[in-house]
Image (cartoon, rainbow, N blue to C red; front, side, top):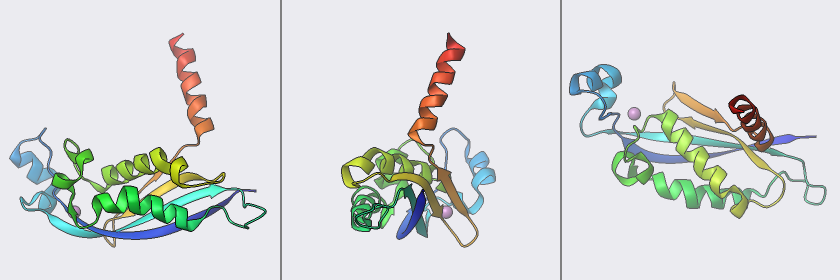
Length: 158
Ligand code: NI
């Protein structure tokens, strides 16, 4: 039986939505107030969901302290009180929309998951709430599903 756990984190950061691919006018039309030159801040709420079997010995899916350390070291340290456009290297050429922030966070958590989190749990969902009204989430496909997709693609190529 699979059980899921969701842990919530908060961080504050500022950003400016602006793409070098578009003209000033197009940027203004596309991003509105979020294109203001000096940026603006948000109190982001990050939810991280993992799933896995409940360990017989501990009764837990995962050790929350391990997850907390992963999120603190690899995500919060990178974003907290930062200007995302200037301070977070992943956004050098990437517009810091919350869609992209969720993607970067999910990539970081996947990359470092096994070096921080013991046991059989895996990351399944990252949700970033930007404002009361805007939230974005990424469902992380299982490794098995990823392998299936790859082999399907290889079949098509062959
Ligand atoms: Ni914004």
